[in-house]
Amino acid sequence: MYEIATCNFPKNLKQRSRTLTTIKGYNKTDENNELLNSSTLEDLMWILASTVEEVFADESTMPARLEPGSTWAAYNSLIIEVKPKNSVQVTAMQNLERINKYLQGNDKKLIVTLDLGLYRPVLQLQMALSQRNWFLVPGDLHIQMAQLGAIGNYIELTGIPEAWVESGLYSETTVKHILDGKPGRRSLKAHIVTVTSLSILLLESFFEKNHYLKEGCSAIAIEMRNIWKTKDRCDITTQSHSMRERLKDLDFPLKLENFFKEKSELSPTFKMVKNYMHMVFSMLAFARSTRNANWNLRIAALDDFTKYFFALDLRNYAFLCAWYISEVRSLEILDHETLTQLKSGNWYPNKSNNPFCCLGVDEALEQENRRLKVLGGIVGITRRQQTLTKYFLASPEIAKLTRQADVVSSSSNKAMHHEVNNAISTRQNRNVIALLQCLSSYTNPFQ
Image 1 (cartoon, rainbow, N blue to C red):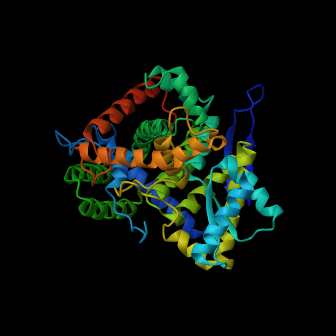
Image 2 (cartoon, rainbow, N blue to C red):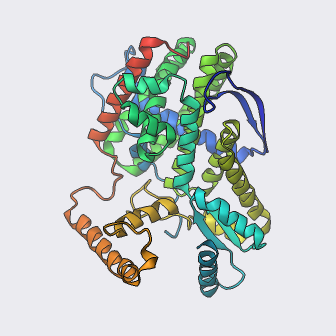
Image 3 (cartoon, one colour):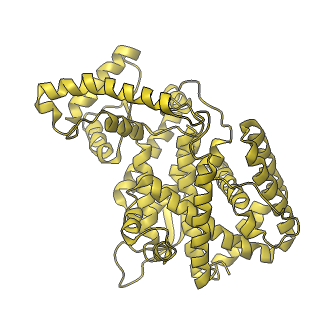
């Protein structure tokens, strides 16, 4: 399915270190490319509007005062997506299958979401039993943690982690955790801040060569930035689609792609940073697919990222993701009904009903387990009947009361994403500037 055209491994470096050059993926459909390009353009437009002061500081059209910027999650929560209509291993799988047959009949597939640690043994169990009535889905949270780990693996010796420490964003201990992808939310925000800072340097170099595009892009970015103050989702969505088309009319995506190709052939550093940014944008596309319950984007983004698991020799993730994608492709031929159910959005929960707040099933389950945990955790509770009864009867009621108390005491606007907040966006912008100053003190990798 995938071919590594060129993959250089530096000598005398730790095994985790890799230098990727060109990686080609097969079976990429036009639909997948369109979904990924649209997602990346959406992210680039957010970066343009968020960093308008830094990128277009010398423009005469720059207003004296701009509305505060927005975080990646806050911006995406204001873009309206088409929502779906509905919001011991052998023993466990057999019990789930019995429940599924009782509810839906014998001819319906059992769809089970598993973390990557369980996905492989249950997949082996499915093969051993020749059970074709199960459809196994790897959990979104654990896929994203694997993606974060792969990105950390790639940038470990590039100087980016050292820039995080030198700029004061994170301590050395925190950086080690981010490279492993363990604190998922913090790692995601670290890469968003880094890509935003690198994009400022990229756009500076790009507009030096394509100066005739600068005025048009500046007007679009300022207009997008000012429209955020309305917090009106319909208005922002309409303007967002309109401005994406205006960027396409300026040939901004095409010119930027040509700029990448030209510079990549001349500078290994440019190629390294370009690969890193592509990995992050691909991961953000997967995160967007989860939070918006977009099944087609989920498969396209995971298909795009899987080649990096192969290139970085993360064999478990590479095999499991490639197998899962092939299973999804087989549904298009063998089981349209199951595929329709998955595309309808029935694979995700949204606990708050707020926009851009859908969760992977594994993440939602972990959150519920955290709510239900009693002192000492839930490990080994099946050994004592009293503890087991307490877990299944008392803990859900306590969790329900806790949620009701949160609703009563909360003063926030429940109709909005929690990151639609000037304090959060100001903190992110401060981190972007700090990292940008650190990177600029060394060199611009895009020159």
